[in-house]
Image 1 (spheres, rainbow, N blue to C red):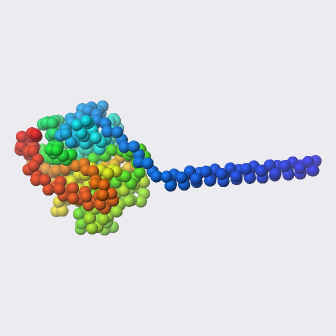
Image 2: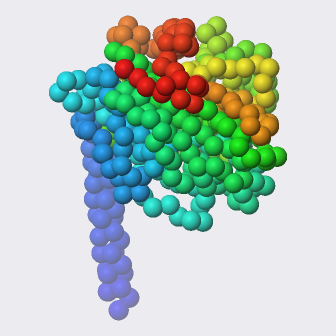
Image 3: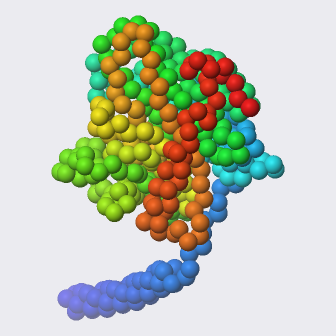
Length: 388
């Protein structure tokens, strides 16, 4: 019996050795194949992902409502007047759209407990977020300025003026005027804040612009933010920018001191960075969406910045944000603030972050050099409100 047991045990050990040897050979073979595949991928040239096909943007949305379209033959601007948001910014040719819509839109029903609307596009927030719990009793936004219906005041093929209702909390009404510059992709936007009823709360114009989502297969390096920086205003840790405390992961912000520009790379998870300056841009591949504003060094900015870049990878929400000074307005007072949009393509030689930062800096200077009286006078500024 013992001899039989020893014989069976020897057979078992022999079988196990054979199985282990076979497994090792299989593992080595599989590992070799696995590494060979990755080595082949690393050596092979990477094909560029297909560009999204240009499509005409919708003219009506379930939740955002109908769209008023401005068209100067170079660019189209679509405004969902019912919710006071810009929903389309897209270059075109005579044959139709020549590129995808630069704005990111989500046409879905808001969740009431959020106290904000998840629609994207370009909208206005009139308060600093830190004060919202005191003003509204929640962390959301003004239910009239960013929620109730806006009305169309004047409309032409290349200009549109819309007006919000009266905010019960802030005592203000906001009018937005959009004008397409002739033979150009530039959009002039004039925003007027009127204080019609008394309120203790300070206000500002905070334009928040959601840009389009990722192109499948596009590398992170193809998308990033570039920001102007006004020197001499230190942020925490004496950096030329500020980061929000809930930033996740290591921030990827680089400062070019000679040019005074910031490069904000796509984060692993989430980032929000802000600074003071006169322009901000979102770059995708070889094109950029740039916004220019004025910066008043003597003014108060409760957001401790007037330019902000936001990116959340999980939801692919990317935003360029610009702010006016903060105002304590008296009843009957009005404030006017301007922001200019532009779409540009980089020359082939401008293919580095530094070269593109310099190129955008020059573009911004030319945009800001346009005389203010070049814009068509609007009804909110005492003009006729018409445009050629």
